[in-house]
Structure formats: C-alpha cells, structure tokens
Length: 352
Image 1 (tube, one colour):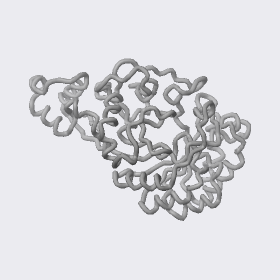
Image 2 (cartoon, rainbow, N blue to C red; image 1 turned 90 degrees about the vertical axis):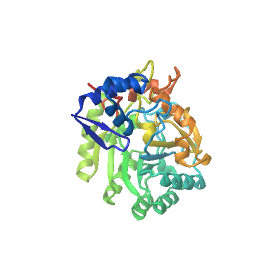
Image 3 (cartoon, rainbow, N blue to C red; image 1 turned 120 degrees about the vertical axis):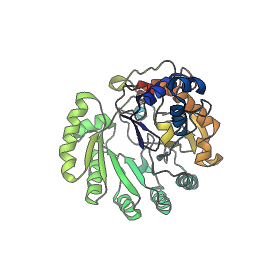
Image 4 (cartoon, helix red, strand yellow; image 1 turned 30 degrees about the vertical axis):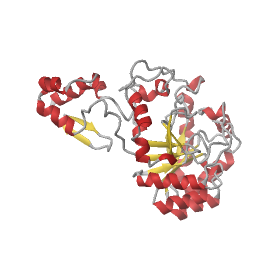
C-alpha cells in the first residue's frame, strides 16, 4: 500500500505495486506512452495520465496550488540576527505603497490564497501603514500570519490586530530569554521591548507562537529557557529550522549544500507567492537578493503570472525538467536534498 500526494495535499492510496514501479520508471526521463503501456499495461498508464501523475514533459510544471502570499511590506529590519543575511548586508529602508498593497491583496484573494504574511528578512511592525493594511485584509477576509520580532508591537498595534480579526498566528522570533545572549544573537538592544510586547500580546489573548532560531547545543539550551518562560504564559514555543539561506550564511550556520546535475523539485514555488516591496514576483523565500524574478504584480492576475512562461521556465529548472544554471539558487539549498527531513516535496524516484 502506498499513497500519492497531490498539490491539494489529498492522498490517493494505491495497492497496485506496478503503479509505483510505473511512476518510478517514468520519473527518470521522458518515455513514449507506447513503451510504458507495453511494459506496465495500457490501463495503468491511462489511469496515471488521467490523475496527472504522468504528464507530457512540455506540460510539466504548469500546475500550482497557492497556499500563501508572502508580501514584503517593508524591506528593512531593526535587528541583525546572526542567523540572517541582514547582519552582514542590511537593506535600505523601503515601504510598500498602499495602492500596490491593495492591488496585491485583491489579486491574491481572487487566486484563492489561504493567508498572507508580511515577511521577507524584514520587520513588519516598523511599517507605518500596518493599521491600514490590516483593514484591507479584513475587507477581503484574508487571514494574516504575522512574523515579527515584536520590538515595535505597541499596544495600539495589538489592539488593531484584535479589532480587525485578521490575525491567524503571531509568530515571534525570540532566540533567547537571557538578555546578554539575546543581544549577541539579534544584534539589537530591544530585549525589554520584545519581551514586554510579547507578554502583552499573550495577555490580550492573541495566538502567540515563539520560535527559537539557532543551531546545535546552543539552540537546545536557549529553547529550554524560552519554554520555561513563555509556555506558562500560554505561548506555543518551538525551535525554528535555521538554514544558511541557500549559501548566504557562513560560520556555524553554513550547510555547504551543492547539488549537481538536474534538480529534484521543491514545494515552495508551487505553493507560495513571494512579492517584493516593489511588486516583483520572485521564486523563493531564501532568495535574499531576489535574483530569480518572473514578473510584476501589475502585469496580470496571479494565475496569469504563475502560469506564464517565465514562471514555468523557473519551475522546470527547480523540478529538473530542464537543466538549471550552475549558479542557480536551488543548487545551494537544503530543500533539494532527498534526505532533508522537512522537505515537503520528494520526487517519486527517491522513495524506497
């Protein structure tokens, strides 16, 4: 017995081992349908085609299912975390105009996005339009997962989050509760603001998740201390899967990933829409410098942009249909490693 998971996260269970062999065999390279039918049976091939488990290589990578819109409402951050490229190469202050934001949210709503975030290596509570943006989300019925360091999460902003009712989750980055350790890890002096504002959000009844960034024994020690402080207050606390952002970080965060040959797929480009502070659509949450751009939100609907040739061409590289350039972002990313435990997409050929 095995199951095939589609982009809609629905599992289709199968008990025919020959179907699994068919999918493994066909995943290695393009095959003529006549050959597949002769080897595995015409009925199996026809059923796999009907379920879109087998597709013409030309049509591959046109499918997607939008889960979230990742909107860069600000380009700047007031921290310089050691686990983030901002620490060594901070970006200048930029804020997304409200007119552009309204267009983006309207188009994401029409495309069926489940929720939005305001994150991309930035701090959204520094956004001078935050209150207005919440009103726009409320108008469209669009939930918000707010990733923040809470340093500027004032009482007024907490009240706005409660009043508008758009908050899905409040995810707060607190890598340590020891003040000196906190300062080392975040490069900031906002310890008391972050701690106090997070506790105020909990008292207000917001759904607070505290994430602990880091690696190794240091993170485990800090995680225990953060749990002791925040779990009794009602927060959910968990470690964050910290990575080197596709090779941008060195030192203890460096992963040294280098994937040769054809790439093997990733769930991110088919589930999440990354939109920059200027309205550009780009490939991935790990693309700090936004190198892999495939359109602008003003050029059409989200569906038109995601099904356009520039987007499809990028996904064909990510999924190994076409050879990716040697300097392609994904060659340095852990999401391309078949044994990466948090990988949400695995090619059929890698299953035993």
